[in-house]
Image (tube, rainbow, N blue to C red; front, side):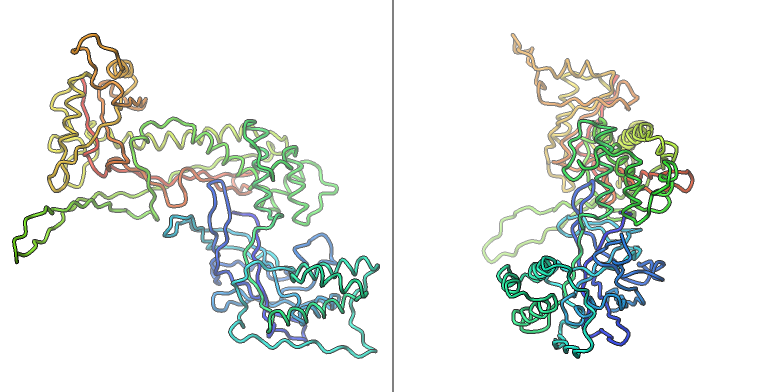
Length: 602
């Protein structure tokens, strides 16, 4: 998220000032755009306000031709002012006299689209009513403005859409004052321009071929395009606004480079995506040079160390490369780490960090006979609630400039993988700590009693080893559980949670055998799934749990849109290199005791 992206917008023809050669470009950012990151697709929405947008680069900001930064001939003018109006960012630009052809096309309404590059700095993740991820960019920096040929959102309009300005054909200049349009050097160049106009405005190949056959000039082709558009639209041409991720988007390129490093240096089994294959053979130095070149910075005369340093300090996408690599290594290790206790818990998300109250409700209703002319009786509800919040946990790891110069990323990716394992272990230990709290009885519930309590019917009256009779007592206790209304809910046990010391005993008891005698029948063969949790330090205590999909019990939560560990990267401040921050927003609690049973063992 910290490399420049672009939005497409349109400008308003009534804002043209022929004397000063200025025009207003209206960037409407109310609509979202679908993007993708390591966690999948999401919709990005920009916040447009004076507080959200950093305009520190406004002084001297150029107006470019289609984002081209490789020559002064691509500078069409300059940005002169910015204002905010009705949720839109409006940019006033001045066109250079050197580019009169562009100015004439703007006045004629042929060029009507602009692309604004921006650098996201802060954002807020969430989900819509359908559960789709939404990322609202709450702070972003305006980086550059370009005129472009095509907009992509046909539903968007300029500010003047309710009263479209009348489109007038520009008056032809006197014979002695010809428009300063750079002539094409060859007929082929003119033909190419005519075909480009036909493609841009969707006028078809027959339209272009007809002009080429009669030897039309570029100016005649533009006038013909204007006339064709007027006939097709029967009114003023409509500017279009869209938000797009271009193929040369620095954020996308950095992600591809990060994936290439991950596949070639960390996990050779990873199958590279097609866009990332082009970067598989690049060294860190090659990537630094590429980032600088795309930022318009020459690397001529720079040695290896100077190139790396310049990329770290002057480009925003170079650190993103290693953030992506670290994130891939971290998440691969995180997902591979064993976490048996999480199988017994239900996953959810919280929209913020405030304590959330989960309410259980049970009706007291029962169907009663209604006599002729009799009245129906009202039923009520009884509730129970549990409250918990999520917290933020994390650390920062560094990749030194020396390691980048030496093209040595092994220690960094190893550490990222270890942090992925550490994140998974942190989550499981969090759940274990809940389970064994208060000398193994668990946390206190809303009724003032521990999770495992005699009054809850889920605590063995006396400790006993895993055996058919103790398992039978546990199953009976769960079957006899009642809901808030006192009615049986018949909980079905599914898992046997044990410490390593009881693993062999559990496997022996739960093994399916072929008995020769009736008394040798194992009633629990294939009925319970044993789960071994090495973090359970009590060698005798064991648990029975129901499927968390069938009844609430243990629950863990992430911040909405940030499931699992998240990473952010930047050029280092505390170290000379790249810093990658690992963050985990996580919390857990017992919501109900009815799906669990504990025997302290012997």
